[in-house]
Image 1: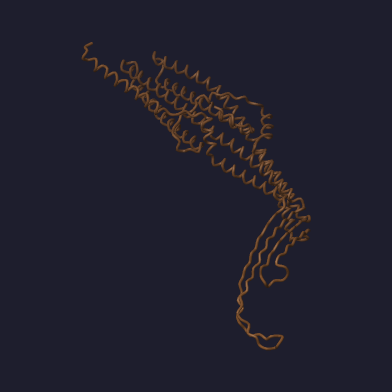
Image 2: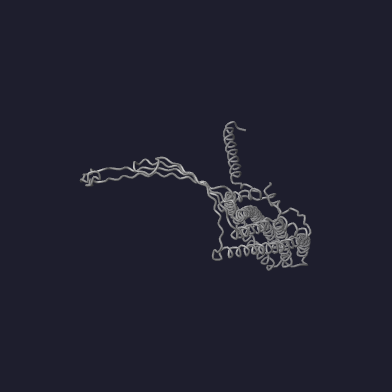
Amino acid sequence: MDRRLVPFVRSLLFVLCGVLMFSALSAAAQESPKYTLADCVRLALDTSPTLASAEQNMFIANQGLKRAWGAFLPSLSTSYNRNQSWRKDFAYTATDPSTGLPVQVPDRDTDYKDQSLSLSAGLNVFSGFGKFGGLKTARNELHASEMDLGYSRQQAIETVATAYINLLRNERLLEVSTEARDLAAKELEKAETYHRIGSAAKSDVLQAKVRLEQTRLDEVRARNNVEQGFADLAHAMNRPLIERFDVDRSLLDRDYQLSDLETLFTEALAQRQDLMSRSFTLEARGGDVKSANAGLLPSVDIYARYSRSENLSEFRFGAPENAASSVSIQVQWNIFDRYATLAGRSQAYARKRIAEYNLQQAELDAQLEVRRTYNSVIEARERISLTQETIANAAEELRLAQERFRVGAGTMLDKITAQVNLATARGDEVQARSDFTIASLQLDRAVGRALDALMTP
C-alpha cells in the first residue's frame, strides 16, 4: 500500500468505528424497557385510588374502635374563670344615722376581682350493655374494612394481570397477522412468476393480490389492537402516560392444576375475603342490636367535682379563698321516650336481617362465579388441545394445496383458503391460551386464593 494512503485509511477506519459506536448506543437508547407482570402489579398497587380509599375506610374504622374503647373510660374536664370589673359611685347626700344630719358622700371607685379553678370527672358505670354493643360493632367493622382492603387488592392484581395478558394476546395475534402477510406476499410472488412463464392465469395473480391486501388490513387492525391493549394496561396501572415497554411473552405458556368443583365451592366459602367482610358486617349489626336494647335498661353514672376559688374584692361574702368538692350518683331510666327506643330496636333487628340476607346472596353469587370461571377454564383447555391439532392439519392442507397448484391440479382459491385456515387456526390457539390464562386467574380470585404470587418475578 502506498504510504501516502495510510493516514487516509486510518481516518476512514476511525470514522467507521465512531459511526458503529454511535449506532450501537442509539439502538440501546431506543430499546424499550421490559416490564414483567410483577413490575406492573407493583406500580398499580402503589398508586391505586381504590386501595387508597379502602385504606382510609380502614383508618376510619380503627378510629371508631378507639372511640368505642374510650366509652369505658371516665371523662375528665377542667375549667378556669377569672372575672374583673370596675364600678364608680358618684357623690351623693346621705343622712347620718347617728346625728340625723345630711352628709355629703364623695365619689368612690370599686374594683371587683375573683377567679376559680375546677376539675370534674364522670364515669358511666352501667348503660344497659350499650357500650359492649358499640365495642362489638366497632371491632367487626374494622375487621370488615380489613377484608374489603384485601379483596380490593386482589381485584386490582387481577385487573392488571388481565390487561397484561390481553396485551400479550394482541401482540401474538399481530405476529400471526405478520406471518400471514409474509406468506401471502410469497404466494403472490410465485403466482406472478408462474404467470410470466405461462403456468398460471392472470386471475390467479389477482386473487393473490387480493389476499395480500386482506392480510395487510388484518395486520393494521392487529397493530391497533396492540396499541389499545397497551393503553388498557397503562390505565390499569394508573399510569396513562407511561412510556411504551415490552412484556414477558412466556406468561401464556403456564399450566394450571384444576381441583374438583366441590372442593372449589368449599374453598370459596371458607376464604373469600368479600364473604368474610359480609360476615363481619353481620356481626357488627348484632352489636347494633345490643346497643339498641340498652335503651330498655337504666343507666348509672358517677360524677365527682373539685373547685377552688379566690375573691379579691373588698365587698364579698365569706372568706376570700374557698374550696369545694362533691360526689354524686345518677340513675336514669326512660319510662317513655315516645317509642324512640322501640323503633330503634326494630330498625337494628331489620338491619341485621338485611346483613344476613346480603351474606346469603353473596355466597350464592360466589358459587355461581366459581362455576362460570371453572367452565371457562375447562373450555379454554380443550380449545388449546383442539387448536394445536387444527394447526397441524391446516399446515398440511396448505402444503398439499401448494403442491397441487404447482403441478396444475389445484387452483389459487384452494391455496388462499388453506392460508386463511392456517392463519385462523394460529389465531384461535392464541385466543385459547389467553382465555385459559385469564380464566385460571379469575378462578383463583373467585375461590379466594391470594394472587400476590404474581408479584414474584
